[in-house]
Amino acid sequence: MNGKGITMKEFKDKVAVITGAASGIGQGLAERCAREGMKVVLGDIEETALFQAQKELQASGAKVLAVRTDVSKASDVEALAQKTLDTFGAAHLLFNNAGIAAGSTIWESTLADWEWIIGVNLWGVIHGLRTFVPIMLAQDTEGHIVNTASVAGLTTGHSPYSVTKHAVVALSEQLYHSLAHLNAKVKASVLCPGFVKTRIMDSERNRPVELQNETARPLTPEEEAIVQYVRQGVQAGMSPQQAADHVFQAIREERFYIFTHPEYNAAVQMRMEDILQGRNPSNPFQS
Image (cartoon, rainbow, N blue to C red):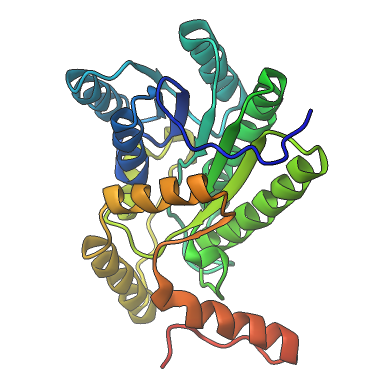
């Protein structure tokens, strides 16, 4: 298997698989894939929104398959892969994009919070890689995998969300090196966006019944301030379509780290310098 010089530049008639595809960045990616002339596989847990997204893409002339998928379950991701192969015969682009936000501080987040957010944000990516990478390698054609992390995966954070996104960055870096060691035709990238206009702050709408919290703890004023800061940032954020443009440019250029918001580079640098200089962690939310 020789992947030297193989970069995915042409997308027409290739097959793209996207999780979290019914809204936000996932929907932006799906729309861009359709414009590129790809066959598009949509995976999402939110059934009504999923089939609405399928209907809209089909109306634009795209070939689309929608599969209700809970990425925290290996069996669901395996079924997504099988239906992709049964319908389109291959998978060339994989976007492990599904993600949610939950919890508060490390010790006040409930076990249900931790199980839910790790299940979706981290296990969802693990399941996607374990299921699709062997398929994509066996095809022996050019392909690309993009895991959605966050700039929160590169900076000092305050929540379980940051924990999972740091893990996705580390997982993606390992994937990159493993594929390079094989000289594979399949490449990898990690998407680390800043604020994008999505529904992530309304993640509770898709929370499984078995992982619901029995009672909601009232937020402290400091926590409420952080939530409002993030909510306002998301509402005023980059459009999912713009984020998708960044992703496709990076795939064409075979760039691993995909940054959409250079204004956060200083916060990333701050953390790296804290580590290298042996300083205690700086707070990126304080000026």
